Image 1 (cartoon, protein in one colour):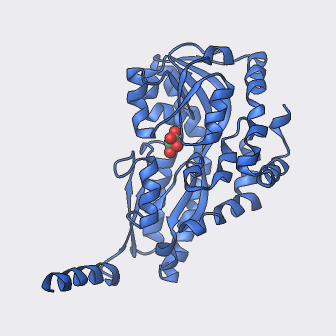
Image 2: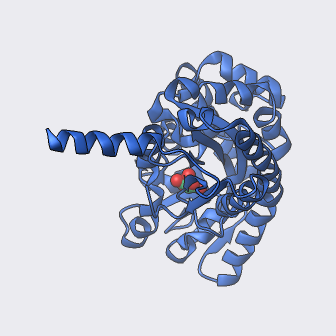
Length: 334
Ligand code: LMR
């Protein structure tokens, strides 16, 4: 009986302790990227703005580089409230049952960042974020990273060069299909494990925006990088819905403003960060960078175009058509 009372007291205190002025509301923000990557910089910026704008009522603890949770675990941790905020890549929502997000992984779906923003800053993007709510998640914003390129232990100039290559991908069926279309063998793996897998030859290669390749030091263990720009990698910033809805309204408004400022910042720095990372890879002299000819790029596009139709029933025809119509291009017809 005594033990039961003790347990009840612990549970009650844990749940109902009010946040007084002296006790800031803690937001644990976990992510898998380096502090120097675009997402790492944006998370640090959000911490600063959120603490400023809430006049210290909120304290944001940022846990970068998978120090708290890896990819799959972090979404589960958010749902049970062990952390309050995350910014997983859009390729990681499929396992939650939100297959529509995998549209962002389709090859060559966005020709430019402007085309991407037509989706992320428009009604299609907003509608996708609303789909998170039944999962106990609030979608707050999209943060850009950049376009992905192929790296490998051997030179890659055409899809034929990828035949039989083991390629690390994020947990997305579209990316699986993409690698198969190129003749490669896809291998889903947590981001935190990629460096070692490349180093030991568990996989031969992978795909990344330059900022991730460089800040995870993958260029040290990848001899060749081919500038294919064949897909996009960006993030949805998300929060535990019960936590977010339960915030005092002045605090929530301050956080919304902090998020809007941070989104502008994140989307402003991401392109440049990726350019700088490419230059840093070049300067390191560890990776040979290959710029494919127009003809070679056309061969990649031709191999990858069928992935759109193949994945149509998984993503949903309506979502796909809404995206094509927002961007003004339908790469399935390439
Ligand atoms: C990846 O797993 O390759 C990326 O999603 C990592 C990240 O969050 O940028």
